[in-house]
Length: 183
Figure 1 (spheres, one colour):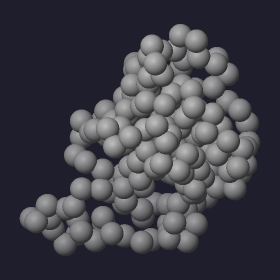
Figure 2: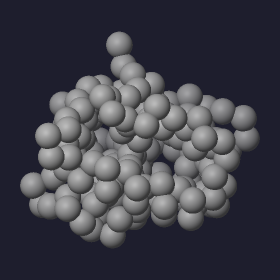
Figure 3: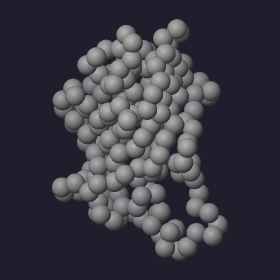
């Protein structure tokens, strides 16, 4: 996906949205329940248990936990430390159509993206889907709306973002990331 004047070799949105210029006005909105929202008071014990599960098995990780992780990843892009979301990536990552990149190469790419689009808004536009993969991996896809601005340049739209997560102990790390323009 690209916008007028965009570098055709890279996706426009990625989750590359951090920038010192992204002020408190930059925010993530949601068309679905807020990411990381507390469970309602009437939640059952089973729901509470699923939401706080610490299992390292890919088949046992809860949807709520994955939603929290994805939300934290997207929010990290608003961190004043440019490239903060790079901490979510594994040491080596299949990074869009750019091949396998190191976390430091990704951090540099995020910095360039932040300089190109200093004003950004992102919000979830639906539910996440989860597909178990080989080994201890999960493919998580979610729709994301965006608005990007740099002076008079503007780009807006919707993408389907895909993260492949590898479960390591009680933690997850991104081992692949991609996106495509949503229908």
